[in-house]
Every structure is written in structure tokens, then in C-alpha cells.
Amino acid sequence: MARFFKQFYLAIILIFMYLPIGALILFSFNESKSMATWTGFSTHWYEQLFHDPIIAEALWVTISVALLSALIATVIGTFAVIGMDSLRKKTKGVVLNLTYVPMVNADIVMGISLLLLFIFLNIPRGYWTMLLAHITFNIPYVIFSVLPKMRQMDRSTYEAALDMGAKPSEAVRKVVFPQIMPGIVTGFILAFTMSFDDFMISFFTTQGTTQNLSIYIYSMARVGINPMINALSAIMFVVVIVLLIVVNVRSTKKPKRTLQREY
Amino acid sequence: MEHVIDFKNVYKEFDGVDVLSNINLYIKQNEFMTLLGPSGCGKTTMLRIIGGFEEPTGGNVLLFGENIKGVPPYKRRVNTVFQRYALFPHLNVFENIAFGLKLKKTEKSVIKKRVEDMLKLVGLKNYGDRDVSRLSGGQQQRIAIARALVNEPEVLLLDEPLGALDLKFRQGMQLELKRMQKSLGITFVYVTHDQEEALTMSDAIAVMDEGVIQQVGTPEQIYNEPRNSFVADFIGESNIIDGIMKADYLVHFAGNDFKCLDRGFNENEPVRVVVRPEDIEITRGIKDGMITGTVTSTLFMGVHYEIRLDGKNGFEWLVHSTDQFQIGEEVGFILEPNDIHVMEASSYDNVRIDDMEAV
Image 1 (cartoon, rainbow over the protein chains, first blue to last red):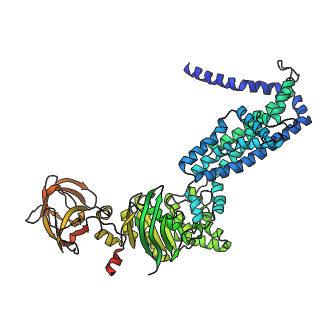
Image 2 (cartoon, one colour):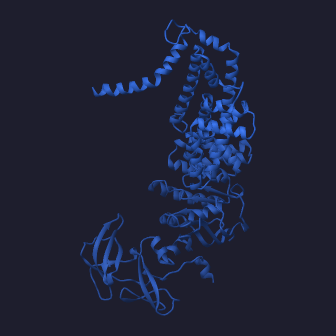
């Protein structure tokens, strides 16, 4: 009985969490335009999706911003971690906590403050402001992915490299990077994911014709629910979930090379 | 002989705390010099200063007579074997050893030969393509030594390299290191807190405590003629008794006058007397003139018994004996002049004993 309730409890939680998404994905394959009744299976809405030039444009914006912002944030974040490593303990704690704030800060606060900043600096909002905003909120994710790898690393390997005659830049390139690379890759994927599904901050840092998929879905939904939204949301959900699974698998994997060889 | 390394009035502070104060030490060519002391005594800091990972706050360090202030580690002709080996986990054994040679753009065939020679030297032939994380502690340690030696350093710095190994293996490695040092003719600077290790391997030992060099000398000098009670206590077990120097060759302690081999103290100068437990031979047949005491504990140590005696004046004697005694037994012993070593009541010393004798 207790066992039954335990599993029942878990099931309720999972249903609670995944039912809306399940319904969304299910109805994205619905034949009719109805959001309430199932009339039959069809990939019709997906086909329509791929023939919509505005969506194609939004997809391009989403992916290019996600890639660029993740890439730039990864470079900045990684060097930040390497730099922070040589800070004193106290300073490091302060810097880390400062870095942590944007991660827990409400998106709307971040969005509005960026909006105000761009207005104040008289920067026209569009693709580039969105990219800047995404780089900003992505950096902490990279830092918090790379940092554990940096902590795991034996610091004296860096000194050993210098000892063998490596210049500091060579030591970082040949000894530090390879050891923290798993964290860097994880950070990149995580940053890509965060950028890919961001709505709030993108919404406030762009105007007019520049829109990513989230903004496009939002504007479509305001006009009236179209099953194309379901299809688009379903695709976004799948992309994000796949990337998050990759991140999780990577971070639970053993840190060392797992090559099994017999001697 | 040429001085390879000279510390001249070196001091170092971290956040206002003195880690090294006024260090003066030289290390000779082809010498096996051990920096010995408890953790936090500054020995590793000295090694890191030679390696270039720390800069002294004041004073100068000379390497082959040249001031190495500001010279980065990668430009120094020294190599280090780090405490936990610091092997590169993303590289295999061969790549680890070849790391320094590749940086110097050495020709591939030369690298191959030299790495293989090194592997042979440390007894790990054919281990080249193994993953370093799959080696045992002892093997990793050998790779770390090979990786440092392949660069043909003029000085090899070793930071407690045997600390993580088990006793039996450690003793084997001690002999091997000593053999390598002799056959390669490289100056070794070796950091350890293990006094036995220091006595076994070193040509010279610098005993350190609280950032100060307490005594420098050969293992025999350090053991037989400790300069102060810290050295006496740290190097082996000993009985340290307060006494008074009555005259040259005559010292008073534990209620008696004893003949000794020491001179040069002032009359009635307070001194400390060191008696090594293995120099005391106790007997049940108590005679006049013997120091007597009651056995309070005995501990079997394998080769000998460690016996504690409750002597007169409340002094507790530590004695090593191959014979067994019972708790409560009355025993006595005689101290011969060469069992007694007299030290100044307190002295910190930066001078090597061999220099003192030359003066």
C-alpha cells in the first residue's frame, strides 16, 4: 500500500509537470485546427511551419544568436574562471556571488534593465542588442560549468608545465584547457540552450522586425491560437530537452578518460 | 666545490606572516641536500623559491652565482618533482615525459630515444602508451621523476616525493633516488618531514623550524651533535636535560657531575644535555655513581624495547634496550663521556658545521 502511494505520488508530480507539454505535442499532430478535439493524425502543421518565411527568419535569428552568444560567453566565461582561480579566497567568493546574481535574478528585471540601458545609451534595439543581452546572461552559466572542472584540476599541473619550460600561455593551452575542456563544452551547450529558449530578455531588448522563435510564438498567440504554434513549441521543447539531457549525461560522466584497457 | 644555490638573507612573508626569516644557505654541486622540518616550517617555500613559483620578499637567491630574482620558472635550469606528482592526466606516459622536450622543439627521433632511456632508468620500460591515471602511486612517482630528469636539469627539486608511498616501497625508492643522483651527477634539493629518510639519503641536511634554519650539517653531525633541543628532538628520540657547564669537559645535570667531550662554554653557563636513548645501557645490578630509576613502562618495538624510567629529580628517561624489564623494577645506568652531548640552552644557527670547523 505504502509502495503504491509512493509511486502514485511520483506519478502525480510527473503528470502535473509533463501533461501540458504532452498535450501540446499531441495536438501539434492534430489534423484539424481545433485545440479541443482530436480529429486525426497529421504532420500538416509541421509542413506549413517549414514553408513560412517569417518563421524561417525567426529560426535563423534564434540559432545564430544562440550559437554566437554561447560561443562568445564561453570564451569570456572560461577566461574569467582561469583568472578567478588566482584570486584570493575572499575576493573570489565575492566575485562568484556577484556572478551568481544574474542567474537567479528575474528575467523580467534583467530584460527591463537592459532595455533601459540601451535606451539610455541610445543604441537602436535589434539583432545586436539581443546578442549582447544573451552573451550577458550566458556568461554565468559558462562560469558555473567550468568552475567545478577547474576545482577538480590539480593546480600543480600548471606549475609543472611551467617547470618543464612552458610559457604561461603555453601552459594554459596545453595543460589547463585540456583538463577543463569537458566543463567548457558543457557550458557552451548550456548557454546555447538558455539562449535558444529565451523569451523575456529577447522581448525587451529587440523591437520591430527582429524576432526569435519565442517572440514569434508570443506574437502569433496574441492574434489567436494557431496549431502551428504547437508544432513550433514542440520542436523547441525537443531541442531544449535533448540539449539538457546531453549536459546532464556529460556532467555525471566520470571525469577521467574512461578507456578500458587490459594490461 | 662550486655553490649551485645560495640563499642570502632571504626572507618571505605571506599576508604579514613571516614564513622564512633570514635564510642563509648554500648548496654545493652534486650534493644531495635535504630540507628537513615539520609541516609549516618553510621548507616547501624554499623549494618553490628555487623553482620560481614564489619570489622572496627580501634577500637574494643565486643559481650558479647569478641572481634569479624575477626569472620565470620556464627559464630556470631546474626541474621539480611535485608532491602529488602533478602528472598531466590528459596525456599518456610517453607524452608526459616528452612534454618538456616537445616545447623545446626537439627532433622527434631524439625525443623518442630520450624518453625511452628515461623509462628504462626509472624501471618502467614499455610503459610509454599507458594512461597515467591507471598507474600505481609508485609508478606515477617514477614517471614524475623521469619527466623532470629528461630535461637534463642541473638541479632537481623534490617536494616530499615519497610521502604518498607505503613504507616498504618508500625505502626501496630512497635507495633508487640516491643511486640516480650519484650516477647522473645532479644536485638534488629534497624536502621532507621524515627524519629517517633525510638521514638515509642526504649528503647534507638543513633542519628547519618556524622559517628558520636550525642547523646545517651532514647526517652524522646533525644526529650526533644537534645544535639545539629542537634539532635533538626532531632528529630521533632523545633525552634533553637542563644542566650547568661547570668547566671544560665537565657538566652537571640530574644531580651529578659528568665528564663530557664538550668545551668552550662559560663557567656555570646553563646548557642543555642530550642523551640518545640507545646510548643508555640499563642494568639491574645497581652500583655507586649510577643514575637510578624505576621502570614505568615498556613497549616492544621489534628490534628493541622502549623503556621509560622514573628517575630522581622527577626526570623521565627514555631508554632503548634489547633486554626485557618489568614495570616497577629498579635499574641503574652509567653515562660515558661520549654518550653525553652538550648544547647551548637555546641557539638558532644558520652556519654549516663544516665551515665552523674550518674557522
